[in-house]
Length: 294
Image (cartoon, rainbow, N blue to C red; front, side, top):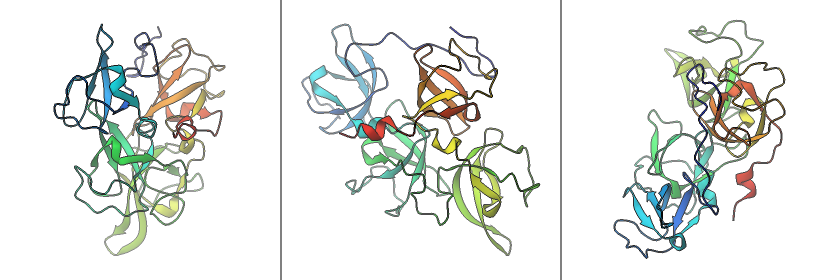
């Protein structure tokens, strides 16, 4: 076990269960041999635990702790990709959304802020408020330039103030040059200033507003998404959260990226390593989830 630091704990997860389904796997219901209760065939939930007899306990928006035999559920590979930090769109087949009342443009791309224990997905889609979805309503977007906003910066892009800008028009606030955050809303500066502005959540501060022309996509951080293989950057001598048994030679898969830039990586040496977005870099451009669409 590693030493925690800076609020990052390095806790190894439980021993693995036989088979593909593990704690936290997103699964689809294909049978109800233990009784349907509030759950319907095709619903997607999150595996919570496994009983001694091999049955799974699964949580859904409609029901907690639903019991299922292994034959009742399958891994939903499209839903598996829906993890914090992933960019997503509403599936074309999701005609009616359970919790969302807003009209979402068909080309809109959002950013997953959180996936609850029950499979409720909280995502930014450029509205003033975050929206709540079911896992079955979304699919991951792997193209960095896809989205409804004009220009290279999209909802969920990892952005920074351009190095060529000595001072942003609206000031730095608590930001520092080089800080990377996620754009979630776009509009104009207002008060008679029609310049395009983006609102960004940074590790140091939420809802930071900047002139869009003074911002840029960070080309490395924007590629750090769930399903991507990464390593600790060679330039990072001591990660803020510690090594936890890993090294510069370690390669692992990003499991989640919090909106404040905390990345969870599954390394062989440490299954729940946590570090900062600017401490890691991709070692491959292939996203496992993009490979996995079955």
